Length: 142
Image 1 (cartoon, helix red, strand yellow):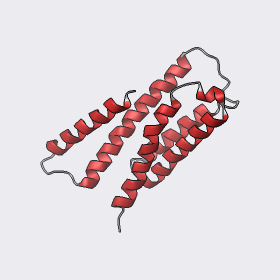
Image 2 (cartoon, one colour):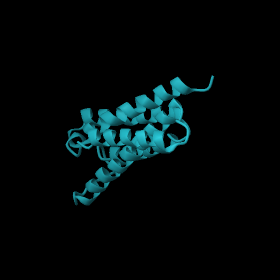
Image 3 (cartoon, one colour):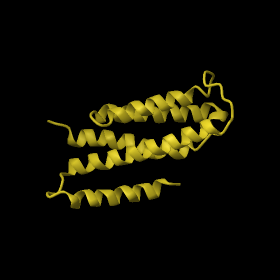
Image 4 (cartoon, helix red, strand yellow):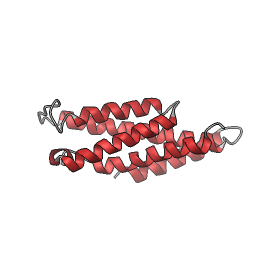
């Protein structure tokens, strides 16, 4: 639900970024800024979802399937977030791997599918991974 407002906010930030510099940033720097701001927004939303799941009071055994997927997804997403600052190509694949785990968990386990807004959250993250791969191939050094 927050994704359209988040994207609009990022585009407004991009407009500010272009006008705040003395020289207009290159297209590569604009893409990098856009992807970083979107990923920071996703990590904040991810933290809200994870904390709300932990604070609900439902006791989950996080060492059994499907609930072991929650900490695994968090670790994979944090790895993609950390690598996104320097290695867009690797971060793109890690984020796509996160989406694959999320889709497999949603298809295979009914409890996983009913535990939160993972599918809605997964679509923008999937696009983010594709954008990282696109950014790498479009602006990689020759």
